Structure formats: structure tokens, C-alpha cells
Image (cartoon, rainbow, N blue to C red; front, side):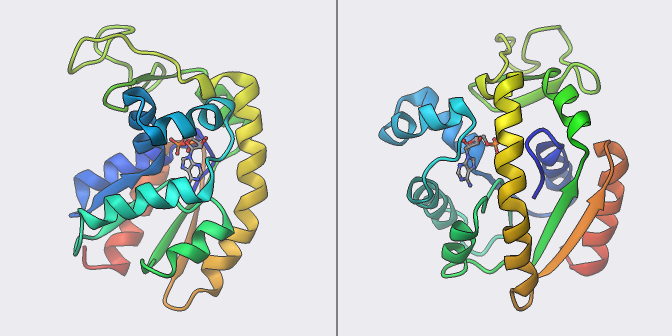
Length: 208
Ligand code: ADP
């Protein structure tokens, strides 16, 4: 868990390198549906653009489809669940062992969002301040142009942070009450500093 722009994606990417796990990012899946103009993409588009949450039924559907292709693997859920209702549903078909909760100050986030650029087709993300592309404005792998996500614009970011804060407390309460689930909070403003702590925690807690 972590606020939009708080480095959740960056931490997830590092975890994938260091551990034998598979990630499912509902945000990335939604974005590729939107690009491909699938029925799901058409339904989700206006919500994502405005920084609003996509209806639970839509997100649950894509999550279930993804999980079906990854049976028996250790999964890192990135961006799901986002609401207590999603968490309740998730309980019916997925067991959560650990919640990594990232707490990053909002003023740091607002600053960072303006630096974030993305290669839409693949979901590869760059930050001009700390992991810039090799050539400014272009994706390292395909050479295609990078774009700013419409929902990374300043006023939309604000709306997303408000939504995140509203859902965070009940979500954390849900996981704290969930049997067999550990919630660990990491505070800081830089992923490079937070990540080693997350890694050490997971290495010590799980044999991944
Ligand atoms: P961030 O964490 O930076 O907000 P994501 O890529 O995780 O970015 O999500 C982008 C957008 O996709 C969200 O603002 C929302 O519209 C939609 N979305 C992603 N995950 C969910 C979810 N679990 N429930 C509802 N909407 C979601």
C-alpha cells in the first residue's frame, strides 16, 4: 500500500528483481485495456483519467483473470485492494500474508508526480530526477515517446491523494484484523532509502 506517486511501483520493481515473485498491478492492466480499447478499457477510461477509483466489479474481474494465469506463484499485489469492499472480496479467493505499507509525505509526492513520465504501451515508468531515460522524452527499450499520465496532472494528483487517504485507514484496519496477516509500515521520502528496509523485512519474515 502507498499513496499514488509514493514510490509503490519503484519498490515493486525492485522486489521483483530480488525475490521469486510475480506482480499484478491493477493500474497497469487497466492502462493496457484503455490503450487496446477493450470493453473493460472503455468502461475504466473516464475514471482513471479523473483519478477516480474504477468500480470494484471491474477491477475484481481483471484481478481474478490475472490470478488464474498465475496459480501457485507468490504474488505481489500492486494497487489492489484499494477499498475495504475490495479487501473483503479478495479474502474469498486469495490469502494475504503481508502488507507493506509505505508512508511518504504528500508534499514530496506532489513534487515527484510532475517528474514522472511513462511509456504507455509497456507501462515502463521514468522519473526525470532519479531514473531518467537514456534519451530525454524517449523510452529506453523501444525509443518511442514518453507521456505524462493524464492522472499525474497536479489537480488530479490532489484528488487521488484525498481518495487514497480516505481509504487507507479502514483498509489498514481490515488487514490488521485479518488472521495470519502482518502489516509493516515504512516511512520516508526516498525509495532508495526505504527499499533496503523492505527487503530486509521480507527476507527475515518469509523464505521467498
Ligand atoms: P497510483 O498508485 O499511482 O494511483 P495505479 O497505476 O495503481 O497508480 O492506478 C491508476 C488508476 O487506476 C487509479 O487512479 C484508478 O483509477 C485505477 N485503479 C488501479 N487500481 C485500482 C483498484 N484496485 N480499484 C479501483 N481503481 C483502481
